[in-house]
Image 1 (spheres, helix red, strand yellow):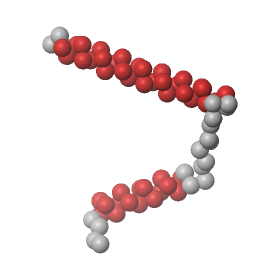
Image 2 (tube, helix red, strand yellow):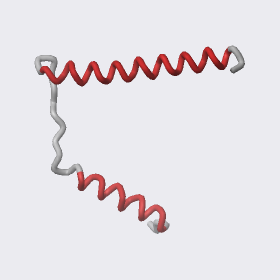
Image 3 (cartoon, rainbow, N blue to C red):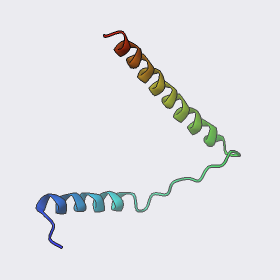
Image 4 (cartoon, rainbow, N blue to C red):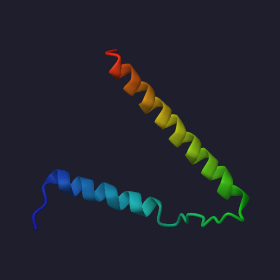
Length: 65
């Protein structure tokens, strides 16, 4: 299979990223862990903010702004 130069560069970037994270281990958190709720709260807060922003933009759009 012949890859173009751009495809080869993209593949090389992916491999470098995998190598960077190779020794990194993601923690497995359960509800018994304190960090579980901290991370959950951060994620839900970001999701709620995104939903509010989307809703606001839709309201503005519906009013022709």
